[in-house]
Length: 102
Image 1 (tube, helix red, strand yellow):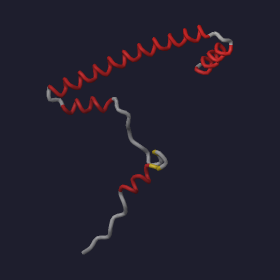
Image 2: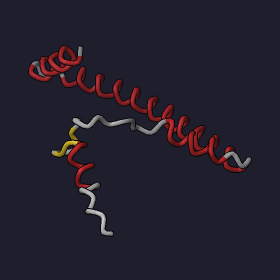
Image 3: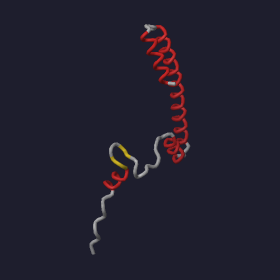
């Protein structure tokens, strides 16, 4: 779908149909503005909910509210972060134990 849209715009460009391209740009801009307003509304609702939970002393719920929308999860040992596997990162953080001394 996206490629057809892109190629359609390229066709408009090669045909010199700048007015139609500008119309597409304005339409997209309006859609982005609507999305931005919805996003701002969600953020302010979320901030209001967080503040309300904190003010009523429900700190656990407030912290859970913050972390619910955060990306995350459990990594598998073979997952690669950057250019290093999770297994290698954990090995670096937790070196071999030293022998016990009596």
